[in-house]
Image 1 (tube, rainbow, N blue to C red):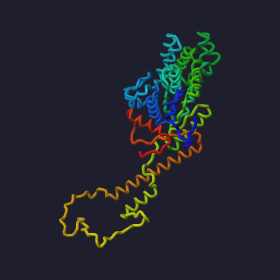
Image 2 (spheres, one colour):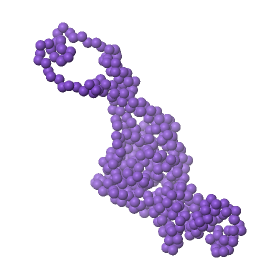
Image 3 (cartoon, helix red, strand yellow):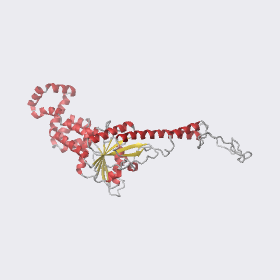
Image 4 (cartoon, rainbow, N blue to C red):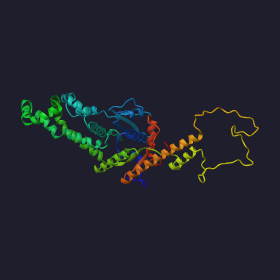
Amino acid sequence: MTLDPEGTLSIDPLLDDPDTRIVVCCGSGGVGKTTTAAALGLRAAERGRKVVVLTIDPARRLAQSMGIDSLDNTPRRVKDIDDASGGELHAMMLDMKRTFDEIVEAHSDRERARAILSNPFYQSLSAGFAGTQEYMAMEKLGQLRSRDEWDLIVVDTPPSRSALDFLDAPKRLGSFLDGKLIRVLMAPAKVGGRAGMKFLNVGMSMMTGALGKLLGGQLLRDVQTFVAAMDTMFGGFRTRADATYKLLQAPGTAFLVVAAPERDALREAAYFVERLAAERMPLAGLVLNRVHGSGADGLSAERALAAAENLDEHRIVDQTDGKEEVRTPSATEPVTDPVTDAAPGSPAVAETPSDPTAPTAQQLTAGLLRLHAERMHVVAREQRTRDRFTALHPEVAVTEVAALPGDVHDLTGLRDIGERLAAGGTPAGAA
């Protein structure tokens, strides 16, 4: 991707480019990947593209924000978008087990599929084996792309402690299902019957004894039965994993690393940027989410704190030299009663009793100045963190999204996020 002179990420040209077919939003957990993916999908659809958003977030926030009761393994069309440009928006949430079941059903006959789906080891593997969710996300991406039904697929990667799991899991699970241990466990079934068990007992008694103690005898038998039924499918897992990996490397794919302006999140983002480069995968840029700003950034934290201290000491800050100014009435200025603030001899004006515990105007102002000083410290810290990232990776385009006062719950909120994304690098407003 070509950077503009300021190194900012241009979202709209990326979404409008017909050659862009897949956008992958990745990053560490809790940085706003799901919201970013949904906002990108909505913006692309309202600019005329036929989009499907694939989320792996089990919190169902995407469905709620898009006005859908629930999402499942089938793309659902989102209503009430602005389709004047001819675009469409569909959304779905990965059902890990259902996707695995579909693979089994598609690549085996009915009898073998029934045996696999009812196998206890398969049920455990498909429901929660390490790396299965990431692998199935890639399987579903491959299925969506092969259907060629959508102009653009936006992927919200699985939440995980390490963003690298998304890249590693397909190969890791593929290697497991095609590995030496699986082949060893498959050997008795391939030999068949008593001869197979004799072969197992004579040739690998020590190994299976250890596995039996580790896994339990029944689990080991379930694994062997599972492996025997899956024999014809193991090569397919590796083949599809390799094909999906190449799809991620293709020019039509764009990775967006999503991060918060915090040290740990940007450290993870930098690591991911380096990994993408090592794997030769196309990085579009960095989305820096929840950036704080101030509409009064001309007032520094130091000056705000100094003014607050002056107010606390009941002084008035002279704006020319910063000294306290004590005023005395001039000869022509009427003298007023210090209690009623009325001229002598004038009728007294009844006053509303005030709450003695209520803060004074000076106290309120001092409090606001301190809040502003805290905000400016946050802004400065976030800027330093970003500067460290850009110093290490000057080639990475960046767009900032200002922090919002609350969560996004509907299409209007997603549309707002999309506009902020497209504003790319402009100063964040007060939030």
